Image (tube, rainbow, N blue to C red; front, side, top):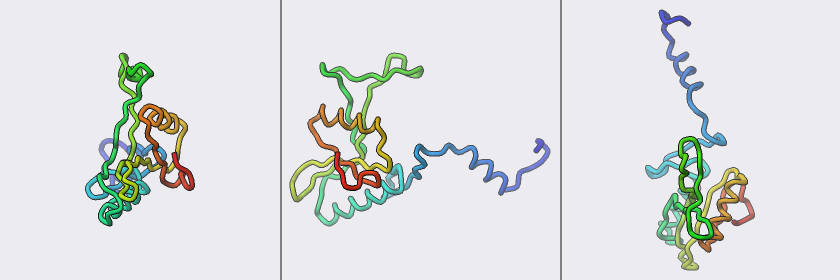
Length: 146
C-alpha cells in the first residue's frame, strides 16, 4: 500500500492487532471492582475473595504485597542490567493477603496459571526470609500449597 491509498477500518484494526504486544503467557487482564488483575482466572479468584469478605469469612483483604529480597546480612539483592547498571532491588510480589476469621491467621496467596521456576525460587526466598507461608492457588496449583 502506498501513501496515497487509505486503509479501510477492517485493515486498520488488523494492523493494530499485529502491533499490540501480547501479554506474557497470553494472560488477558480484567477489571474487577475497578482493580486491574493480570488474568481472567486471577480476576475470578479475587471476586471470590471479595464475596468471602462480605460473608465475614475473611477480613483485611489486600493485593500486591511487595517483599524485598535480602542477603543474610540484610543488604538487598540487586539486579543489574543495562538500564540499571548499579542494580535495582529485587522484590517478590504476592497477589493476595488477608486474615482468616476462623483461625485468626494472616494468609498470603499467589494465583498461578503457570508456576514457573523463577517464581518458585523467589517464593521460597520470601518464605525463608520472612517466616511466612505463601499458598499457591489457581489452575497450576490444584491440590498443593506453597
